[in-house]
Image (cartoon, rainbow, N blue to C red; front, top):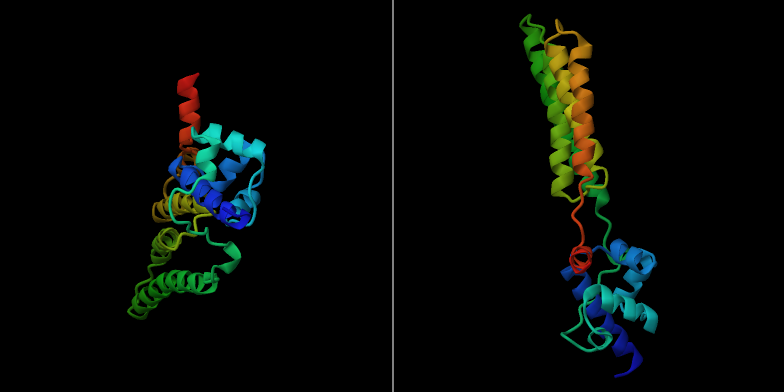
Length: 206
């Protein structure tokens, strides 16, 4: 087995073991004191870890160093982020059109009622959480979850704003006191993370 083939075999084994352990590249990198970019480089077969790192990796995954260097199955390269076509523009446009569509419908309903002498500005109070919810659903569908917790927090806030605008006789501090606690609950819930499998195994051994 030449060096290039060894790199590909090792890359395949690292990908399989890491994903099987439920770890991200960043989590594996943190466990080895390397960056996620280095892990990505190993998984693309561009480089191979040194002997010390292979020993650490074998201990983390509960395998032998030989298992990391031996062919297990046909290698499938990890996709290079630079090679993935950028479709963010189309996705962003779809989301923008959907959110704008919500407000267009709200404005259309408001104008239609206005023409017959009925003023219902509360329509916009309802459109606010609906538009945020539309945005929330679409970013989940398209996998753009980087700021998900902030969008969820915005949706919760929009619900309280709608409640206040629809029931103006209520004191705002009574409503927003609950809102503060709800927002804290959102951020705490979004930061609950599943412990990686290899950490749970180490805890059991201890």
